[in-house]
Image (cartoon, rainbow, N blue to C red):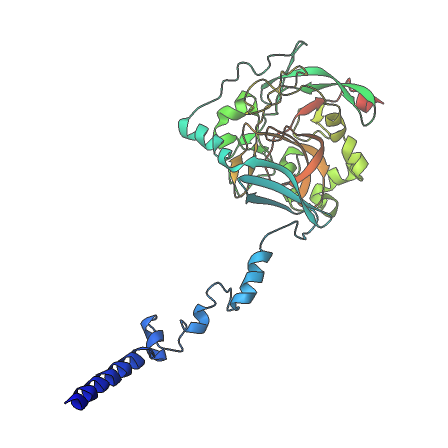
Length: 368
């Protein structure tokens, strides 16, 4: 009897061991099938799942390299190219110089819709205090072409670069001349001066903001001159003959779309505009007292693919200086960094920006 009970106990123990052994070895094909709805060897096989971060069929180790290389640190580029890059809450406007990207100016991404807010709310800023702060005399000039009146001043400037003073008469407002066309216009008439107005609202053009022009339009040249080097095209020859060197472009007296007896403010004249020349209004930061009388306001610009931007943040102006076939010089004053670049930096000729006009006569910079 004892032997029989011992035999039963031994048999039960052997059965239990056999069950445990069979449950510890799962079917490998069954394991794959349970984690995928596709047949083994299809595009969702184990090998490909392990490389889910790959790009264009590269394995996972190469994808890590590609990911790390996407961090752009001054990548090589073609001199004269311009670009716009958004990162870390900033939009950076860049130009390629000596094969490297350099930032010309920047703006906060969260402020780029400030003009859109004006459009949405149909708000026009109060311009009553535009000329406040200036203790000198404002004169008035009426453009005989359209009857538009401009305030202008006798400006007394100084530059450390040359160490000298200069006197000239300059408009205290951006030029507003020409026919308004809708933003994004693709076809232009070379026989008509055409301008953009902020948010396609002519109120802005008529109330001191002035018109926005491509570089060729501001220089009163055919539109083709925005996309070719002026010396290479007969249509731009009249300008090229007058600006045969960088030094000549720096001091050129070029009428452009200014009235007779006036010219586009050139680089040399801008060099003398040191001091307090910002208006007391519109600037989000770093407003001035307008002691110098130029009443500079941050009118922003229009850029293809972006539209109107940087109103209340950036003052930009074309100068009669070509950089290359696609770029020209402009000056800018920023409320982001309190920067005033009056020597000029490059921008795409097909951007739309304002201009200021200087009187030809009684200008010590053109009489020396």
